Image (cartoon, rainbow, N blue to C red):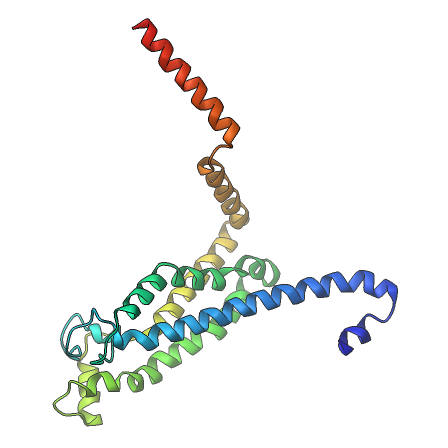
Amino acid sequence: MARAGAILCCQSCQSVLAPRERNMSRSSIVLGNVRAVVIIIVLAFHSVLPYLASLPAAAYRFDSPPYRWQAFPIVDSHRWFGFDLFCAWQDISLMALMFFLSGLFVSPSLARNGTWTFLSKRLLRIGIPCALAIVFLMPLAYYPAYRVTAADPSVNAYWQHWLALPFWPNGPQWLLCQLLVLNLLAAALHRFAPGWSERLVRLVRLGDLQIRPLPISNQATSLTESESRRRGAIRLW
């Protein structure tokens, strides 16, 4: 409040700056709360995966395709079906919400920064952390998944099994990889197809008008007309 009072020192300043500052504060609070809720849900989702009742009795072997230990690194003996319901519910909406929050300000950012500045910022913010996590963090994070089924739990044996895999596991960083690809696609559209976001908005609005239900009065009129046509056809028959 002291900061706001120092900035809005006169009536003219209040009339110009107060609505803008108030709106920015509200949007920041809303988006911050949504992000916080999403982070909590993601942590809860991954925390309960070892306790799903639908998992097999034993943990997935490290060398056996299709390498399901990537999704379920640890399988616990204690289970609860409620966690299955929670994870199934989150599978429906959680990823869509995360992609929505990630792409909410892509178009304004492209318009403000331009293609190359936008890409450089995204590579610095998404690409480099993603690469570092995949290269250095994933071998450490998946060691427990190897240890629970390994005959030789030593680090040297684990590293040999890791290098023998037909791929380099990326873990949860698959989301960052997809976000980076989608950002590259958005930047390419901004570069070679200016105005694509506005056309996309118009297309969405057109689709919404096509599927929007008729008002009750219009529905009654349509039903009345169709019923009269049907009865007229019956009389002619």
